[in-house]
Image (cartoon, rainbow, N blue to C red; front, side, top):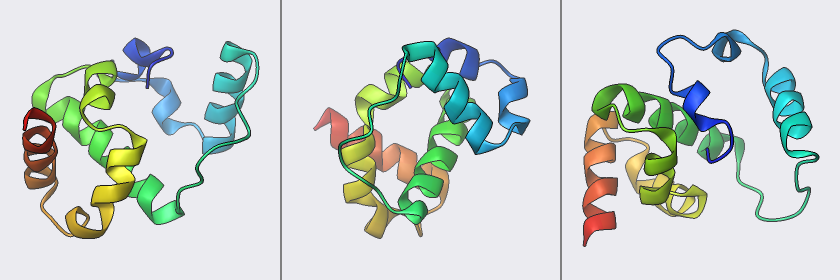
Length: 101
């Protein structure tokens, strides 16, 4: 989200059709090695988070870097249980409201 994020915000990015292994290899090469330590999130949280981030960009035209400032991985993990059943636009609006309060 903070690396080559501008390319991910393009209307059409060929990486969106690539497999996740390929995308992770590209990121690994770009930053010289992904950190292998830290918080591990469930697949459900990661899937929902990725969907919300991508939808958020198209919904508000905000860049990925700004979206991540508002709702980082920890925030998304904390909110997942309550928010994953919301309409995605409602979840985005609530995440922005939480950030602004």
